[in-house]
Image 1 (cartoon, rainbow, N blue to C red):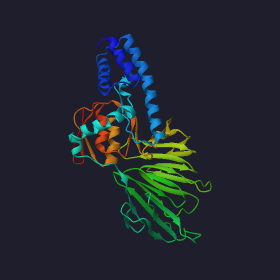
Image 2 (cartoon, rainbow, N blue to C red):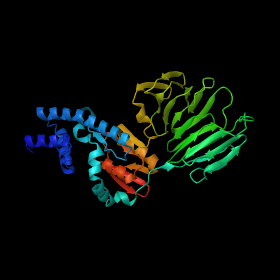
Image 3 (cartoon, helix red, strand yellow):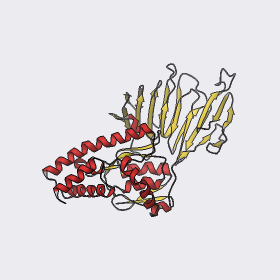
Length: 386
């Protein structure tokens, strides 16, 4: 392709006039230039300009989608070779591209083998284990009061919440010994629980929360596995603490997320509002809003982050920020309840982007395949290959 034609193609893309075929061609041209290290001064200058403009476009598209509350799937961008990334071609928002091609894409995807064994997204489902060992399957339990323990009623709402509250006329729901309940979500499940003190907890897939049916004494303690987002009711005289193995997260009243899956390398606590103290062994750290504490063993590292990314799952999105395909597949595995295996050397490319969690598995895999990752789906197993 002549340089003049190449520049015209770039201009069409930046003006939003490029067809899907032209976008694909542009991607291939830049990718070939990166592979062959064939950057001349003009092309390299265009590349840097595209990086800035397209990153701005992606951010704008995401913000517009959120403002309009419209269901959109945003194409992931792949950082190839990271340091000298060809961001220009991969930073493509599906706000325009995907919506224009959606009907054609859906028809094409329907003919792929990946749909033959499709999977629905996760939903509100969990099991409540009472203090006597009785188990209540919440997704099939009727709406209304599902248990009455001493002076505490346990209610399921139509919105998929589990609510603990003192019975009417009871001034002291905590009389008698403290009893504990555990709510557990399976792979492919999520649930929300309102604790006896009014604190709200959102549980992600494959997670569990153990808590007392009434908070007595001068502290409030719960135990977490997996991932959860907390909005803690303020009570300065009774601090709230979350135990995650050896890690203790102590707060008075605040909003934060804890990711503590056992297949992750570390535990991440991300603060959105308030102040929390992290304690692991002899290490202690305070977090401020938009900070994340990364805990591995007794070591605590505090970094600045965009805290909203950490709770995207609670708001209905996968939000990938320079995530590898293995990072992404861990999340898909939990949410779609599938097994993931790898064949051959899978690229270390990093991906950035946002995809709704309400779509079928095939749609997510199709978005990923646009960045040259391949999948084979058989029953509840996905094989990932280059």
